[in-house]
Amino acid sequence: MYNPLSKKATEFISNEEILETIEYAQKNKRNAPLINSLIEKAKECKGLSHREAAVLLECQLPDQNEEVLKLASKIKEQIYGNRIVLFAPLYLSNYCINGCVYCPYHRQNKNIPRKKLSQEEITREVIALQDMGHKRLALEAGEDPANNPIEYILESIETIYNIKHKNGAIRRVNVNIAATTVEDYRKLKNAGIGTYILFQETYHKQRYESLHPTGPKHNYEYHTEAMDRAMEAGIDDVGLGVLFGLNMYRYDFIGLLMHAEHLESSMGVGPHTISVPRIRPADDIQVEDYKDAVTDDIFAKIVAVLRIAVPYTGLIISTRESQRVREKLLDLGVSQISGGSKTSVGGYANSEPLDEETAQFDINDHRTLDEIVDWLLGLGYIPRFCTACYREGRTGDRFMSLAKTGQIANCCHPNALMTLKEYLEDYASSQTKERGDKVIKQQIVLIPNKKVRSLAAHHLAEISEGSRDFRF
Ligand code: SF4
Ligand code: SF4
View 1 (cartoon, rainbow, N blue to C red):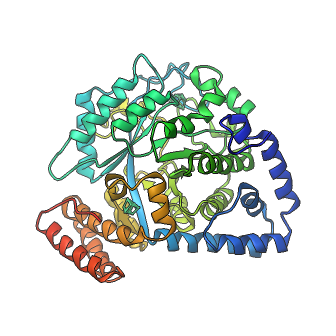
View 2 (cartoon, rainbow, N blue to C red; view 1 turned 45 degrees about the horizontal axis):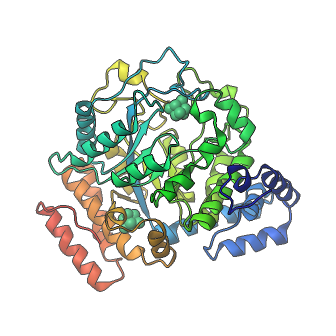
C-alpha cells in the first residue's frame, strides 16, 4: 500500500503506485487540456507531483513538449540564474565487497587493480585538485568494512579539510559512500560533510536485487531507507540519483520523485540534489547489454521534467556525458557539473597506467577545469566555486526556505562572482582570466541590492590584492 509518510521502503516507493502512474501517464499522453493545465501549474515554480510529472514525461504532443523544454529553461534561469557549480569527484578506494553487475569495482572483477589511498596519497590528490582550482569535492569509496571502514573515511575527511596549499582550500566535502547506520551517519555529520549522496541505481525491487546479487547492497530496503537514517542522524542535505539505463526509465523517474516526496513529507525537507548519471562503458561493462539505455532526447526530457517537478533541487551531471550533451542539459536545468575529473583512484596526482586501469567508468568530457571554466564563460554562464551556504549553516530546510522565497539570490550572485574571481586570480590561464574579468565587470552591476553590490565590488578589489574567502 502506497504511503509517502511510511518509513518502509516498499510503502513509500510502492511498486503498485508506480505501475498505476505509468498507466495513467500513458493514457493521458495526448490529453492536451490536462497537459496544458500541468504546464500552467509548473509555471508557479511550486513543483509537480510524481503523477503530474509522469504525464509530462510521457507527453506525445510536439507543441507541448516544446513548451516543457522552454519552461525548464526559464525556471532554471529564474531560480539559478546563469550560475553553475563546479566540483570534482575524489576516489579514495576501489575495494568493494558488493557485486553490482554494472560497476567494474564489483568484487568478482579480477581484471582491475585494487587501490586504497593512504593519507599521504590523499594529500597529494587534494593538492593537485586545489592546484586546479577546486573548492568542492565528492568523496567516493567502495563498500568494504575491512579496507574502507568509517574511521578511514572520517580520517580522510579530516585530512582533506586541513590541507591548505598556497591559496587553495577544500571548503565542502560531499560524501558518496554505501548505506550505513544512524551512528555512522552521525559521525559523518560531526566530521562536517556537505551533502551525503547515495544513488538508488534503480527503484525496481526485483531488478535492484538481480543487479546487486551479492554483498550488503543486495538489501533493497536497507539501501532505500538510507536517506531517512542519514536525516535522522542530522545530515540535512542529501543527494538522490538513479543510474538511468539499468531499468525502464519511466519507472525510475517516478521512483525518484516519490523518494523526494517521501523525504519532504516525512523528514520536512526534500533532497538537496539529484544526480542523473547514465550507464557508461567500463572495464567488464558493455552498454549494449543494457536494453533500457536511454537516448539523448529522452535523457534531455528527463532533465527538463525533473527541473520543473523539483525546481529547488540542484541537478548534477558528471563527465560521463560529452560536451555536447552537457551543453544541452545545462540549458534545460542542470545546475552543477564536475570538471577536470578523474574516476580512478589516485588519478589526479599521477597519470600512470595503473590509475587509468582503476577507473570506475569511462569519461566522455576530458577537458581540464580551466577549459571547462572558459567554455562556461563563453556560453554566458558564471562558473562558481561557492560553498557559502554550508559554511554559514544554511542547510536543509533553512536553505530550502531561503531558496523558495528567492532570498538566496541576494547571496548567490555576489558569492559566485567572488569565488570566480578567486579562481581567475589563482588558477586561470590568461585567456580564461581575461574572459572572466570581463564577465565579472558586466555582472556586478546586476546585483540588485545597492549595499551588497558595493560591498561585493569592494571584496573583488581586495581579492585582486591577495585577500581570499569572502562570502555573503
Ligand atoms: Fe561497489 Fe559502489 Fe561499484 Fe557497487 S557501485 S560495486 S557498491 S563501488
Ligand atoms: Fe550555492 Fe549558497 Fe553559494 Fe548560492 S550562496 S551559490 S546557494 S552555496
